[in-house]
Image 1: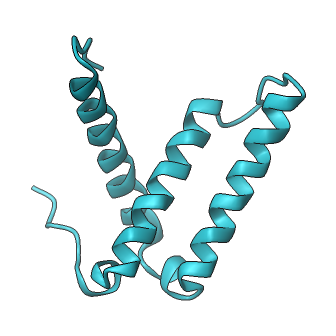
Image 2 (image 1 turned 60 degrees about the horizontal axis):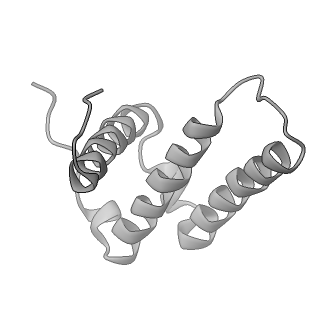
Length: 99
């Protein structure tokens, strides 16, 4: 992780991390889990993450598994997947081949 000096650089750093996480998880999951349930399924996944996050924050609980930052990251990745899905890119496009 870099130490950005400006907010836009920090945003770029997080966006880069989100892309890396998306690629790793997409290679494991494929497209089926998203295509099978569509946009509503993505909304439910985000809702599950938000409910978990609210529970942890309201009750001041330390998570046993996935960190709060990882939960925010998952929400962000699902939001991007939703945009890709709405634009019909998720179904139509494939990842670049691994080098």
